[in-house]
Length: 212
Image (cartoon, rainbow, N blue to C red; front, top):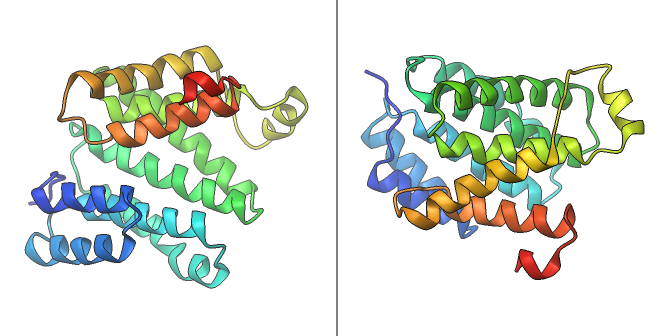
């Protein structure tokens, strides 16, 4: 039976990803697929690897090769029950990561549609599972990002999506997730949340001192 579990190898893989040790992360993903192919966590981890690689290297060939995996991963996660918040969260995270990558390659229409879908998924998760911090992390970042878009561009974006964002609400969500990680050692995304919070504080709030 399929499941989504943070095994020891999965946790180690996430740490490798955060350390940008992508070759090691790929090896750990292969180990998960070999040892427990029903553990669908590897779809999210593999997407992180592609996201970070393409964020560092503007490699069009790699993008063209890996982009079809976006929908394959999202569809594979459909096998999880709706009662597992990681189902919709991982799907939304994959959409957001590919949208960010494609913006970097100056693609906009489909990424905006994907961000809109991801936003709806994350809002539903936050309503149904209010203590699920990974969703707050990404939802908050999206709120801040959308809320900081100049009105001129918001009107253009509105043609293809129904974005709504609030900077203060977004910061509150990310801060809540970050504080959760400060209080508990089992929040796997604490390091990532801290980076997001620092980035948003520096570039949106323009508060260099608080960011560090």
